[in-house]
Image (tube, rainbow, N blue to C red):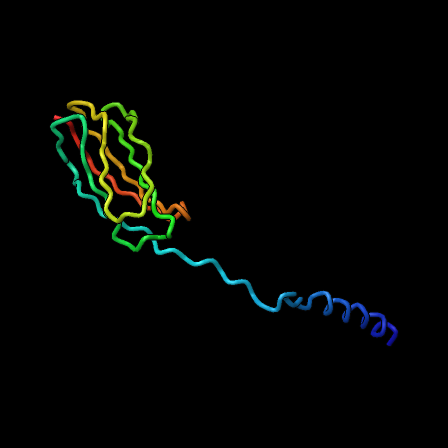
Length: 137
């Protein structure tokens, strides 16, 4: 009987310490809104041919604009012969659905892989990319 009496305060204290505390404000915080995943199309296809060292491509957002802050579009170009990354224009930020881009510095007679990455400005992890091959003849 003495063991039961000694154990009872410990049991009560453990229940009290494990009880759920109430929110001081009385309401639960609302979660941040979830953005629609970014999706887009490009006007270029694999094995595109350019007659100059530049190549125009349009990236068109096919999803809803992810936030009022818009999207960021980055272009990268890699020479398939040398694996060298070729410098491109700075990233473009805007709220337009259709965005005209210009690849620059294409090396003559070298196939290159161009990658276009579109990201939400508000949530950079909400991004997707597409690639295609291009050559300056």
